[in-house]
Length: 219
Image (cartoon, rainbow, N blue to C red; front, side, top):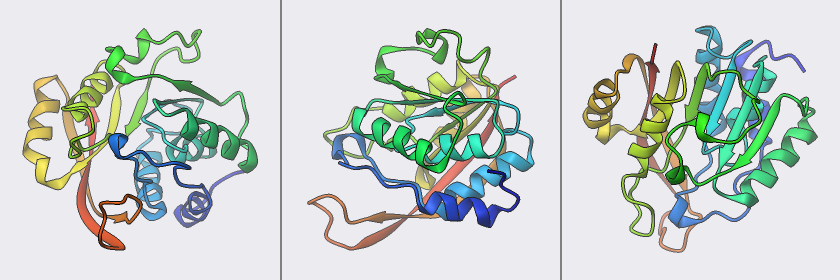
């Protein structure tokens, strides 16, 4: 399957199922198709996807992994802590028709590693060119504190180019944190991210949260 337009990619992403059993402590919210397709198309245009080795860190049900493969990535490593989401991602990649040799799905708690190279992936990736992540924002009491920082640290130890989602309100902190680790922010993408009513404590059908996606060079 060859994707020629961003709209075609968005239509495919719309058919990728959300988390089968969302867990509040993991802050599992699926990235909307319009946002995911926009980030991926920008990455494709900037030369960060096609023929590259991609890491989808905290991959969930595989939106970025599957899309990267469809956009011509060389190989994709999809990593998540949640076994149910990984099973869903693998099933959906097969249903869409992604070459099974393109994507490797790997279950791991990121708090146990310092870089992607620490994982026993049998040399699946020679090196990581581009890493995409939509980490938990660290806003839930039941979640792991400072988990967003852990994602940033692993990303900076693992890839040449990073696309990283964060709450807009944390812009200055995240910007400075990436730069303190040697990263260079080249692009910033702003979105209104709809948080749907999926947990018991939600009292509105949907709430828009302002998010920012940083493109970071790490050469």
